[in-house]
Length: 378
Image (tube, rainbow, N blue to C red; front, side, top):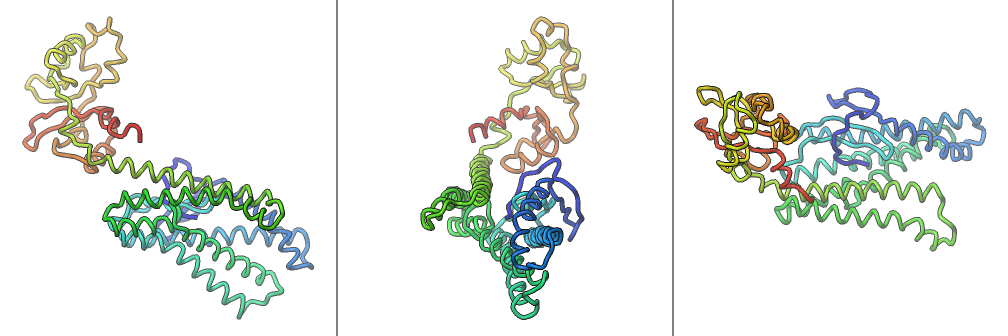
């Protein structure tokens, strides 16, 4: 199972860097490896009656490892195509429900989006086809290798077909998104359509075990129910995150430095906070910039620090003690807007930024809280 994932601080054990891409194994993989080993062991024994108990567990565990090697190859296919398009890839993480490729930027065209998404299922189906041919023409059926080959090609077929289902966050959902994006010329519309289909798939997965039990007349197996609910939860959560991302991206054009800027008054660092606030109120300004005695801006007074200062202390506290020195990255062009502005803010997180004109004249102060309010409620 594959999707683009948000960054995590502790992805797990680092296993290597194929194609320069760090690969991690989450601790949750050991849970699913244990489940696969225990559940598959009886199947191994029934297929190979002469095999002992310990050997059956070993073969079942080997299948669990080889299955996740297949998942890793699936994710690598996504990442290699993404890198070929110049998209930065942060890492791959193998975890409870499969794997995630952390591709840090979206493709800039529906064609690239489709190809990055399709690469994973295509590789899984290719592995299934190769395994099928080996199983039929090369590998004997009555040995360990034959049992593993059969199970692996069937598993890769299931992974490939399942990931082609047309709902986010599955690869088929990204392919559907690319198609709607191509048809409407709107990536947001593609995301919304594919995310809602993904939510529908999640509902179907929850209902499926019980629907099948009505058809067969037998109660659904607990393992089948739990696995269906886990997959449904993953898909529902991923689809919901995609919807939220689409709403956020729809508001990005509203982020304009000039529109959101606050008027700022200049004061020197020794001015008491109470006096600076009085001057700001008189000038109907929403920010205070500390300047040197030549009038050059050198710092911005932090709004959070001002609010945290009790009113009775404000006459005795200077603005300089509550200001952050102006680093070059805290000075932004007043003409910035949209993703360019957000990227500039993301490079150096801060509460306030000084906005300047192309000629260097101070335009105002951009407060991060004002930018955040543009995205409130999404």
